[in-house]
Length: 193
Image (cartoon, rainbow, N blue to C red; front, side, top):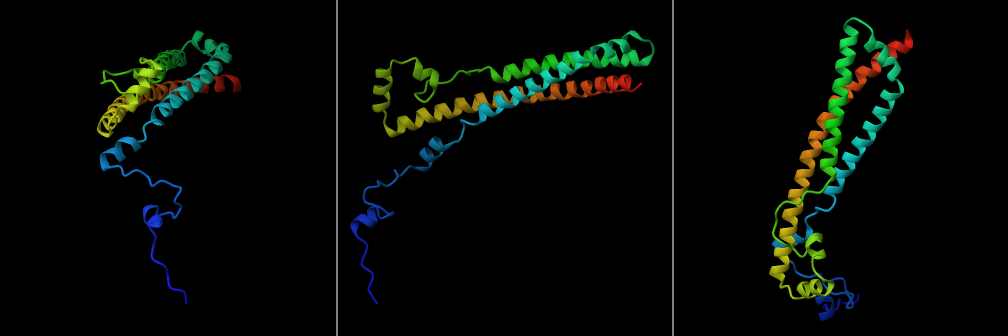
């Protein structure tokens, strides 16, 4: 049996045993949280949902336009069907317009007042390339943490606002969809009779 040799200085310093790899930097809890907070995917997620909402509304409007002659026949008639169809058309139009406005408010960026940060694209773009590089290279660890925390807070505020607008848009979309279904029922009845 061969006795195990004691660990060398290289394997103690580099737990993987590969002396060419540098060990990961020891980040404190605050740095770890600040630099690893996943915010980048949230804003595009709200934008994607708003864009999908706009797409479906476009399809709904296309179908209403395609079968508008049937709806106009119901509206030009008499009786309670006429009033119900008019109410559904009005509801669909108003709720759809409100949903479109909310979708665009979700997609369009709103930047709340925030401290400047070398991690935020607008603040980076306001500097020359050389000035940006000089400022980043001169940061201490504490200053770098402060910059990323400022960015995280601003990005979080933008995401919360985007999802607030998206929630409103989804409510209007749901109401428009119910009205659209009612209109589709009128068209189906007209086509079947």
